[in-house]
Image (cartoon, rainbow, N blue to C red; front, side, top):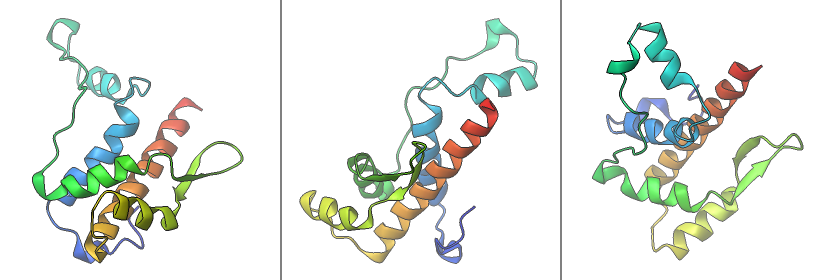
Length: 129
Protein backbone atom coordinates (compact mmCIF):
# COMPACT_ATOMS: atom_id res chain seq x y z
CA UNK A 1 0.00 0.00 0.00
CA UNK A 2 1.69 3.19 -1.17
CA UNK A 3 -1.08 5.72 -0.57
CA UNK A 4 0.22 9.18 0.24
CA UNK A 5 3.72 8.52 -1.05
CA UNK A 6 3.28 10.12 -4.46
CA UNK A 7 2.96 6.91 -6.44
CA UNK A 8 2.77 8.87 -9.68
CA UNK A 9 6.32 10.03 -9.06
CA UNK A 10 7.93 6.62 -8.48
CA UNK A 11 11.11 6.06 -10.43
CA UNK A 12 12.40 2.63 -11.50
CA UNK A 13 14.94 2.57 -8.65
CA UNK A 14 12.11 2.76 -6.10
CA UNK A 15 11.64 -0.99 -6.46
CA UNK A 16 15.13 -1.39 -4.97
CA UNK A 17 14.21 0.99 -2.12
CA UNK A 18 11.13 -1.03 -1.23
CA UNK A 19 13.21 -4.20 -1.53
CA UNK A 20 15.80 -2.82 0.87
CA UNK A 21 13.14 -1.89 3.43
CA UNK A 22 11.49 -5.30 3.15
CA UNK A 23 14.90 -6.97 3.48
CA UNK A 24 15.37 -5.23 6.84
CA UNK A 25 12.38 -7.22 8.08
CA UNK A 26 12.79 -10.47 6.15
CA UNK A 27 16.58 -10.63 6.31
CA UNK A 28 16.55 -11.21 10.05
CA UNK A 29 16.19 -14.97 9.64
CA UNK A 30 12.89 -15.08 11.55
CA UNK A 31 10.67 -14.67 8.52
CA UNK A 32 10.10 -17.96 6.74
CA UNK A 33 8.91 -16.47 3.42
CA UNK A 34 12.16 -17.39 1.66
CA UNK A 35 11.84 -21.03 2.68
CA UNK A 36 8.09 -20.95 2.00
CA UNK A 37 8.76 -19.80 -1.55
CA UNK A 38 11.25 -22.62 -2.08
CA UNK A 39 8.73 -25.13 -0.69
CA UNK A 40 5.99 -23.76 -2.94
CA UNK A 41 8.12 -24.26 -6.05
CA UNK A 42 9.24 -27.72 -4.90
CA UNK A 43 12.96 -26.93 -4.82
CA UNK A 44 14.78 -29.93 -3.29
CA UNK A 45 17.07 -29.28 -0.32
CA UNK A 46 20.25 -30.03 -2.26
CA UNK A 47 19.42 -27.26 -4.79
CA UNK A 48 18.32 -24.60 -2.32
CA UNK A 49 20.49 -21.50 -2.14
CA UNK A 50 21.46 -20.00 1.18
CA UNK A 51 19.14 -17.33 2.50
CA UNK A 52 20.45 -13.95 1.34
CA UNK A 53 22.35 -11.96 3.96
CA UNK A 54 23.06 -8.89 1.84
CA UNK A 55 20.99 -6.59 -0.33
CA UNK A 56 22.47 -4.49 -3.13
CA UNK A 57 21.78 -0.75 -3.14
CA UNK A 58 21.79 1.33 -6.31
CA UNK A 59 24.04 4.43 -6.13
CA UNK A 60 21.07 6.77 -6.64
CA UNK A 61 19.38 5.21 -3.59
CA UNK A 62 22.36 5.32 -1.25
CA UNK A 63 21.44 8.58 0.52
CA UNK A 64 17.90 7.33 1.19
CA UNK A 65 19.04 3.93 2.45
CA UNK A 66 21.83 5.32 4.65
CA UNK A 67 19.48 7.95 6.13
CA UNK A 68 16.77 5.33 6.68
CA UNK A 69 19.24 3.10 8.52
CA UNK A 70 20.38 6.06 10.64
CA UNK A 71 16.74 6.61 11.65
CA UNK A 72 16.27 3.15 13.16
CA UNK A 73 16.11 4.57 16.69
CA UNK A 74 13.56 7.22 15.68
CA UNK A 75 10.40 5.12 15.26
CA UNK A 76 7.09 5.90 16.91
CA UNK A 77 5.98 2.67 18.56
CA UNK A 78 2.47 1.64 19.62
CA UNK A 79 1.80 0.31 23.13
CA UNK A 80 1.77 -3.21 21.65
CA UNK A 81 5.34 -2.68 20.39
CA UNK A 82 4.72 -2.32 16.66
CA UNK A 83 6.20 0.52 14.64
CA UNK A 84 3.65 3.08 13.50
CA UNK A 85 5.91 5.46 11.61
CA UNK A 86 9.02 7.55 11.85
CA UNK A 87 9.29 10.63 14.02
CA UNK A 88 9.42 13.17 11.19
CA UNK A 89 11.05 15.86 13.34
CA UNK A 90 13.96 13.49 13.77
CA UNK A 91 14.23 12.89 10.03
CA UNK A 92 15.34 16.49 9.44
CA UNK A 93 17.69 16.48 12.44
CA UNK A 94 19.36 13.20 11.47
CA UNK A 95 19.66 14.21 7.80
CA UNK A 96 21.35 17.48 8.84
CA UNK A 97 23.72 15.66 11.19
CA UNK A 98 24.63 13.26 8.37
CA UNK A 99 25.27 16.15 5.98
CA UNK A 100 22.33 15.27 3.71
CA UNK A 101 20.01 17.88 2.25
CA UNK A 102 16.46 16.72 2.93
CA UNK A 103 14.89 17.35 -0.46
CA UNK A 104 11.26 16.46 -1.25
CA UNK A 105 12.58 13.52 -3.30
CA UNK A 106 14.73 12.19 -0.44
CA UNK A 107 11.84 12.58 2.00
CA UNK A 108 9.52 10.69 -0.41
CA UNK A 109 12.12 7.91 -0.63
CA UNK A 110 12.24 7.69 3.18
CA UNK A 111 8.43 7.55 3.32
CA UNK A 112 8.40 4.82 0.69
CA UNK A 113 10.84 2.72 2.72
CA UNK A 114 8.92 3.50 5.91
CA UNK A 115 5.55 2.28 4.60
CA UNK A 116 7.19 -0.76 3.02
CA UNK A 117 8.84 -1.74 6.30
CA UNK A 118 5.60 -1.22 8.26
CA UNK A 119 3.56 -3.26 5.77
CA UNK A 120 6.20 -6.02 5.63
CA UNK A 121 6.30 -6.25 9.42
CA UNK A 122 2.50 -6.37 9.49
CA UNK A 123 2.50 -9.24 6.94
CA UNK A 124 5.17 -11.03 8.98
CA UNK A 125 3.10 -10.77 12.16
CA UNK A 126 -0.06 -11.92 10.35
CA UNK A 127 1.76 -15.02 9.07
CA UNK A 128 2.65 -15.98 12.63
CA UNK A 129 -0.96 -15.70 13.80
